[in-house]
Length: 353
Image (tube, rainbow, N blue to C red; front, side, top):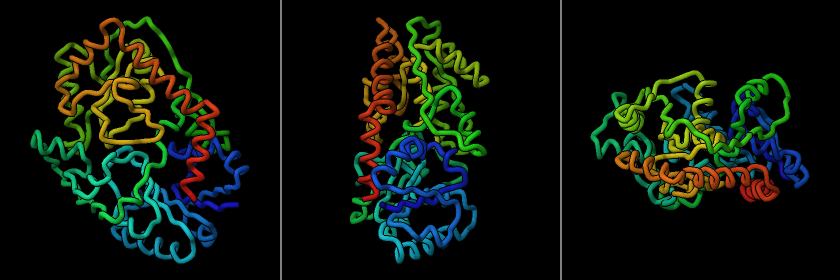
């Protein structure tokens, strides 16, 4: 039996990234993997073949000494545990904690830059896309982002993909179920109900928040909202229930980058029978590889100059339907098929081995 201890925040069942582990927990146990979650450091944490540290433990600690505290923990773990892994669950390719690379066997991330050599550089705002808006449009953050330490050449092999947020539960009642699991041992499962509708009353949905504390983050969203308003589309925030009702009536929907490139909105759009439009994602990889250009989503340039050109092209002859159909089929196969179950469990085994 392989003993895997995961150090995370309280109520791991509420954490989206761990959904596939809970869904497959019994199968993993039958394959000889015993998984335990910890929300604090105890002697039992060190009693393992492998310890996985969720980076939220680090990020949620406001203490100015959090780096030194984590260095001390990693040093202790390395003395007693064979393998120590870092699990970066942020929703983008940036904002890394590479200062811990020398102390871990692997640095797993939910999505990574395809060209790992790009991790050898520093980026304004800590992200490759915020650096782009800073350089191309001279956007500056009023609150400067703390420099993120880049990786070193001999550390790149440690950076690998874990699994993406698409393997979380984004069904109609998923938010209620997640809250309930904080207090009740409700079984974890996928409640996604995929909707198909050829009758649509709206062309594009532009409902998203553009108010961010960092100008380099909100810039792309403001670019898109400005164009949407010029073409007569409303971008104001509306109640969640009304948003989903409106989304189902849309042919296409735009999901810009936020704190990271990926967004929960991406999966809500696909589930509700709508073609997803996003700024080009070809610079990154995730698993399963749900972002396939012009197959599962429609890419637009990062300066958003071809947004309405893309809208016009894919509303013509209802081309949007094919994109959503392909995305839904890929997504269903990633969640519900025997192949999906097998692939995740083998992937997890390979990760810890």
